[in-house]
Image 1: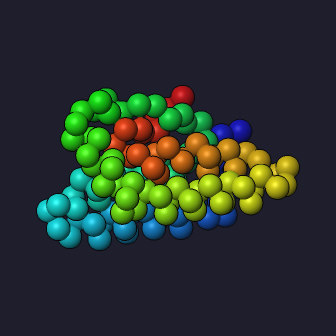
Image 2 (image 1 turned 60 degrees about the vertical axis):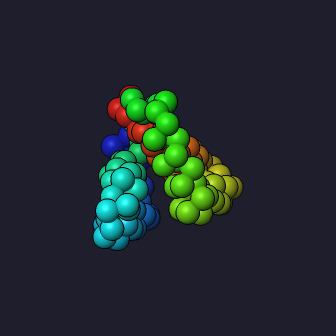
Length: 124
């Protein structure tokens, strides 16, 4: 079921969302300061290609002070807008029965969009 869900996800917007994350990440990497944020954006883009069958877990370096500082910067500059898009997309998709599994995926991606240095998507 997760394979079919991922295929439908890619056809109806997942590919373009992933492409946006990757292109945004590459643009952020234009400066040395933006490299950590670009890497996280690209990781989110790759995770956004196939969210079905995966779960959100705490990152191995989530408790470090540097991760906290980077998460605060990310949240202020990029995270709240990305999370708002996932939230609104999830609400719109949850209106129909067919859209509920896809809404769940958008809600699953919310913590990663808000705090990418704290959370990651893992198999599971």
